[in-house]
Image (cartoon, rainbow, N blue to C red):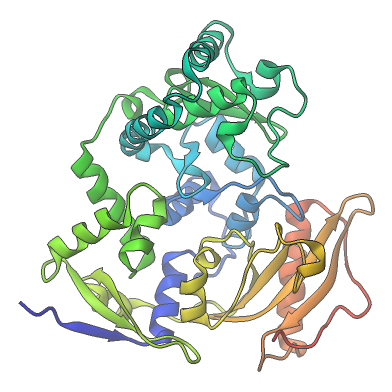
Length: 409
């Protein structure tokens, strides 16, 4: 049977993506902790990153979607209510605890993968380290990498090395975290403290389980709900749970049933892409409204920014994080924030929280070609900067001389 292909315009596609990713509604709402938890469910997870150039990534991601966001509410949901837990998707993330039964299958897969990695490499000494770390947590409660290794830098990743090359006790902690024996129970500053999973995850979620088939079905279905449309690789990569081959088999098995192929047109000179979507995509598109008239300053780890190919196709916006690029080779700067105005990417900005002077400093802004920063857009930018100032607890906002640069090329 030939599956019909539905054409989706770039504008329709952008609006759907922004709605699914929580960037279409007006953020002027006081949702409370229940609303915050609902927002995280909508996204599926929030990526965690240690860099605090302005504010940590997870706080900025949530703050860009909800003006009433406060860091203490997220902390309460994780550490007191146990409504969220920390583990891995495509990277370290905060995840609704209702998803923990799905992650049990991920833990099994990770155990198998790591067993192959350890074979002939660490041997008996590392197995002893694994047992020792788990025993220490059982007998003494929450533990940190610093405590276990006795080295001040044991938990650092400043050298960019892989986690299995860390100090043995740090590696053992990460092994147990990635395979479900330990969970992060709280953080001290930003340093992770681990405890036995049975002391962190509520019992009804901890004892529930899923099969491998359910795991694949959930990973594909829940990814596509949040993506709207995507390739097999994009679907697999959303959670980082499965392979692209598994996602393709899942989609192809349902073609003509609840999955169809769509042709999504791009902005600028981007050619259309043939992607998978749910069969009800037409109804979903008909319900989507233009996003709120709001300029948002996005964190580099925002989920809408994450897939560069998808970002370029839908928004005609080229972006890369230059954190690991040598300073002399950077095009824009160390930590650059994309600017989303309504449904358009209109520029990128360099700013930093200078805590010694209690000031949020804007050092450069590059408009995208064809975009101007006149009075109306500047007013929206200033409103967004004021919200970030409040989020960071800084006292003032300052624009450096020469901050407005020629358009990005």
